[in-house]
Image (cartoon, rainbow, N blue to C red; front, top):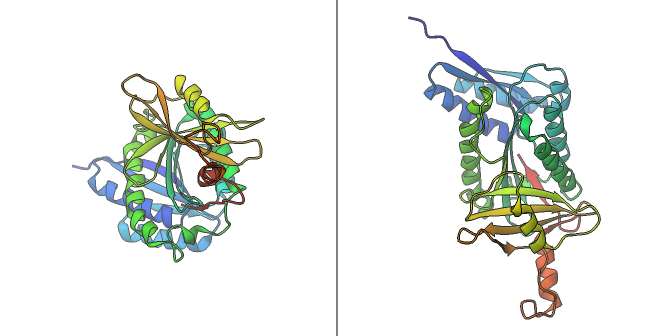
Length: 312
């Protein structure tokens, strides 16, 4: 008796390290699947990346086709609704891919690691459907802002030859965090079902997960405590009490400030945990010196003077 197999196509935007790691995840998923097969169409302007990924996929039994061009150009020619997985290390290209996918109503999976100027790593993952068009634009605006403060061709500083031992140890945890998200959501998207995860999430350690909220302050920076309280009073996506959240505030000059807050379980009030600026005035007993206030700003702000490195 022949078993019918349903093909579930996924498009990969990016065929380098991130795409290879996720191809391995999908190949392993196919071994365990019953009656369904995930297949990949990989798009990348770099032919060498595509060749390596195609060889890897063939060795793992994963059906994969390739297309050498920018992902935006490839999506413009397609009429299907296959999910798009984004594994690109350039913030400008990420923003373009997000907008191109949203223009056709295509569901999106995104995985990226950002090395902050402090030396801290931030893993970001997203699952976005056609119902999340506003969130897609928020995320595209976030990556556009990052592009103005990203060191070019700096991905080797994140997990490559120039990475610190701490980041090398953290990479497997982030990759596992990405893989778990892909497996939890890719089948849902392929069958047009609601995703398992919050639309946009971040982690600092590959274990604790925080929803990410993005806010643009067009005229002047907001007060972190007021901003966190206002955003969580009526969040665009629900958040459970007792949850830590990260707020990325895009400022008037496209710098980014990061504020971490918690929606307390006991009284549903917002408690600011880490912010890019002191909520109390300098000179207050909480902030006894200007040096302490300046240090807080530089530790949690992304600017051309405090740039980031990005990898897929």
